[in-house]
Image 1 (cartoon, rainbow, N blue to C red):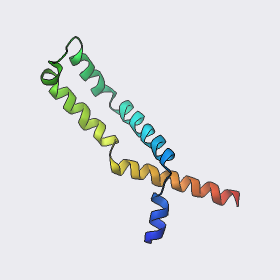
Image 2 (spheres, rainbow, N blue to C red):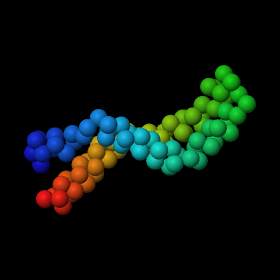
Image 3 (cartoon, helix red, strand yellow):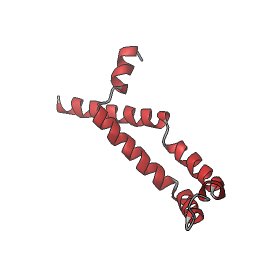
Length: 93
């Protein structure tokens, strides 16, 4: 794949990228619901102490979320979006 082709596929308008980021975050929260619940249970009724008392749960949650919210995932979503748009363009021609 040439550089120009790759650049076209990766170029996504800012608003579309924001929508894709939002979708990525929603999916991550859904996938990591178990860890979100554990963290929420630990944090319940605590204030500042949540920082050290729930460190393990926070780390587990962050590790899970990072699996679904990183640059590689976003780039894949952009590629899929670009391919769908390209397919729509060819279908309309």
